[in-house]
Length: 372
Image (cartoon, rainbow, N blue to C red; front, top):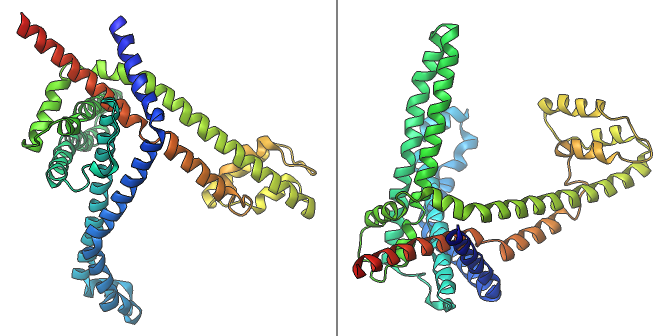
């Protein structure tokens, strides 16, 4: 227990170090953010060019076709090329964004060493790191796909079985299905945890001469029999972060509702409508939402000279807030910036701190075995 408390304190100190390096931390995040988007844009330019060329050469003829079906049948090859181009662009940005996360881990590594990584010395243009990291990402994706594929294969026959078995057996099939799905979810979560540290192995390798699969295997070796240890090390911090996120979201929601309330009261003074008629005028849901909105209305008495805040809160998701909350965009930017500057990156520091604890424990065991 004392070792667990000591490890928790160490992780906490590592997280606090982010705020001790607040300016360097955020400048690094901004630089990495620019790198992710600029690199993604440059690498995707050829495929953007293909889409633009097809638009001017083929897609602008859509208006001359007698129907969209005729156009699609006559240009099926170009449509496939366009879809592939969009897919490749998406993959490119996924790669640059995930590699950006790897670059930030390099910054956090320097903090754990009591240093600050110079802005120019990050691994922006290290082809061997980028290539190996993409390989790790590919292998990790294949591993986590396994329980998903098994789940899809399992669902089809179980669904058919549930339709054809007698009524009393349907309950048994349902119980078995739930147990299997729970087991597959546990397998998936376990794989995610055990694969998380693959990229950290690459980060701490001074030579980077190994294959991507080697780092995957090393992550499995390092986390063997330690999944619950990792979970309990991360759990207190994930819990606190969840509370902070919930409070932040609640504050944002309350501020938005108060601004909308003030705006609605002003409109009400001019129109003379009760709050039910007033909110009906700002209803923005579809036909399926109208019944739910009516049920909420029936639960509250109409108010003529004010807007019932409880009624507004209950019906808020069906209200067109854009037309009433003129300052909503400004407040959204403020909350986004707050999240970026104060919260973005905490989970990455948490993971790399746990990795350091695991590897330190491994090193201590090896030292003891050598001495003995």
